[in-house]
Length: 207
Image 1 (tube, rainbow, N blue to C red):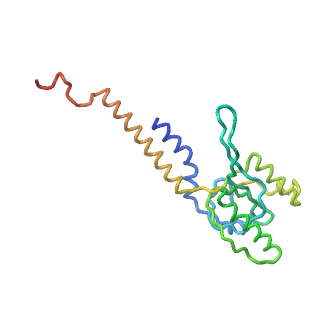
Image 2 (spheres, rainbow, N blue to C red; image 1 turned 120 degrees about the vertical axis):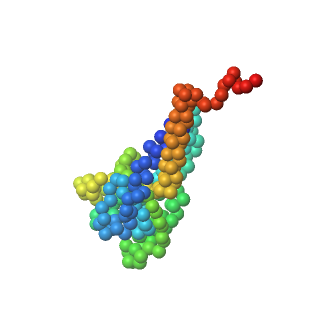
Image 3 (cartoon, helix red, strand yellow; image 1 turned 135 degrees about the vertical axis):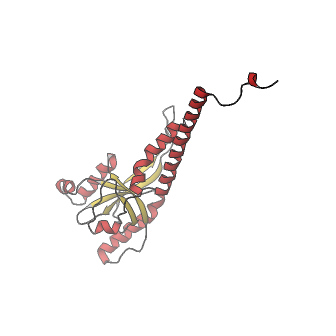
């Protein structure tokens, strides 16, 4: 059981652990044309945010087939990443208010030139945008005036997602400890079964 839990933790955190040690790319770097790809490490203040194009909700499905009420868990936003290039940004629900404020300030900047004052810091990784959010992402861009060919020319759709790399490292270490403990217990049991515990048997004790 320890080996299974430890192995699962290692499997779940190994890729993000590698990402955490990569040099980070800021949102300012992306605006200047710095390329990001799946597996990139992103860290810094989000500069500009356009409108959200999708939202995410979570719920619990019970054994009888029924489900609990949906609870919002975040939004997908469109952010600029260079000239005629965009990325998706997946927020937590706790960050929605700040990002919505940044949207208003971004729209104001486009008309007045006044830089946004809201500071929103985010650290995370870049992944491929897939599923329904990808469909909504393309629909949003096309409705915004881009053609399907122009959307395809922007390259592989990517999303920046928040992640706590501190938590990733802690969980990875826990996974290593569980695997090491399981190996130790296995070797100890094997040693006892093949060579005995080293303790005297009751019939060997005096009296």
